Image 1 (cartoon, rainbow, N blue to C red):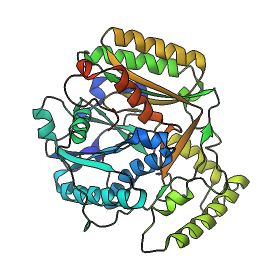
Image 2 (cartoon, rainbow, N blue to C red):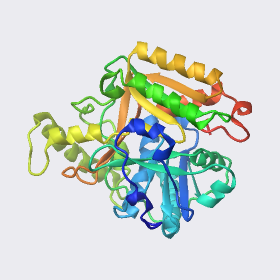
Image 3 (cartoon, one colour):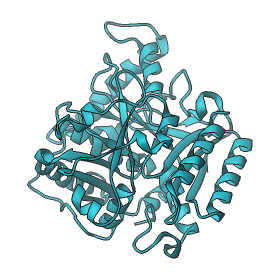
Image 4 (cartoon, rainbow, N blue to C red):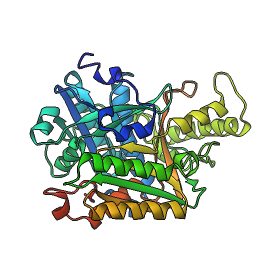
Length: 395
């Protein structure tokens, strides 16, 4: 394994429960860089009904970097109101240009502030935390990176404090967001609740105790159909015209007039709706297979220096999850936040509908991870989490 091929060479983890074990993660090489982003006042945007925009901008960070790297594997993770990724030193300058362009694009297209920062792995480790990565294979054709060690949380706190910032650059190239889409309608809960859960180790928690807690939470989620997967076997809802069409039009090259972008997407969405409704293969596109892979390739659960879940949850399992978390919080093991809503949203990166490497980012439709993190920050003040801006707090 060379440093540049570090992530591509990681053995895939195929059972999510395996990620509760510390040895599932490998330290990031010392010549790599951690890049993180965060949307300014995301809780205010949620209150204003703009959470689909928040999710789309967060996913745009990943889409832009995937396209910039032309398919080269790299670790990334979607956080709802932002995203993070890591690159080797040879891609550090490229990542800075992409982030600078994304900051300008988010401000100009949506009047949304996007923070961005890049930190070297030694800078993080010299402060005490570590950055360890696992490659979780959700299918034979798609995987998501998982992070542990506290380094990502520390980096995000530094970013929110204004350190290591990448400034918006009016000369930066426009981000290439090819493949990014958000046409699916919100899909209602089947078990009554879409539960967003954010659980992080308390500052004094021993790693084995948090790992045991995470394992118990996954066991509770396993009582739900499909481990609580919020996307049904039939796929998410698609109403016509799509709710996210206007947002997606702003992802396309801006030299094309906006009205032409909207007309093009309207026609493309109409064709997609017909094919999905008929459920019959056309050319190389099999809608039944595509929807099955969409569900498989969704990130409804993840490790992001803690455990994040978006569950289609029953009230009984919700109550038991909350009770277990409250006991663990009283024991000094965890700090957590929960948020309930009645539907889930999906934001997609689809390079091609005839390949199986498309990926889909899942979040609650009414605040999701952003509101769960805000609830966590409200419940556990900085005296319990150590100095600095609490991770996930409204910024």
